[in-house]
Amino acid sequence: MLQGVTMPGPDLADDSFFNALPDKVKAGFSRLRWTWRFDTPEKYQQSVKGYYRMISGIDLEIAKIRKQLKKKGLEKNTIIILMGDNGYFLGERQLADKWLMYDNSIRVPLIIFDPRSGKHLDIDEIALNIDVAATMLDMAGVNHPKNWQGKSLFSLISGASRTLQRDTVLIEHLWQFKEIPPSEGLRTKDLKYFRYVNDRSIEELYDLRHDPKEIVNLVRDVKYQQLLHKMREKTEQLIVTHQ
Image (cartoon, rainbow, N blue to C red; front, side, top):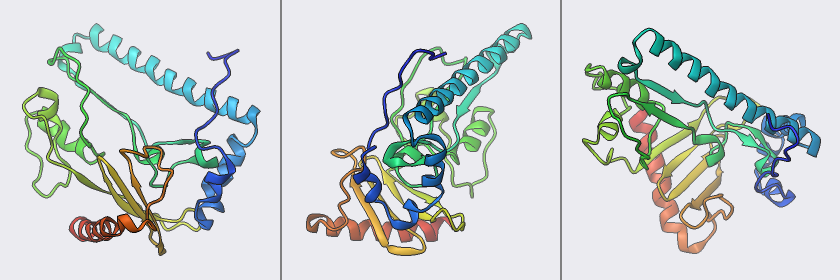
């Protein structure tokens, strides 16, 4: 698979995007692993092709599972939920792996197949990994504990509702590991704010409507100071609420 194909290079691969990163990120594991996988054209082609081959391998395994479900007469009584691990840098900003608060890292695929539905829906709502457990119980007709922070997605899937009434989510990577600076912040449909836990003076703010690749940091833009203050306050509020 993909032999003889040249994969397109990564976005934001210019030195300027790497140089704009905080020093601890530039010296961290994301950069080290970039040197393992992406720092030459040959490594990049091998690693990216291997990545997409693994994804195709997962597709093939799911096909085998569905074939067995049909063989056992269970295909109409089985809901399949596919969700990825953290997102992955494939050389963007001259980085590899995950851990950071850019969308490359925090966004993951989520596909729910319910054989009772009979229709395909693309749902543009913010879903979280903590929603999956509540969704599974709801789809099985079981109430989830009220202290769970996740929300069931079943109402969206069934068409009973068009919204989760969720406009702001807390995003965080808090592992205290020397080579990976922990960070935390907020993601809304249109905005992203985050900071580094061990040095909160390092902040980033993006207007995702006009800057979906998170290129222009608005933290020092005078027109965005009021919004920056609100995002800081909301971050503190959600940390207290969800701790």
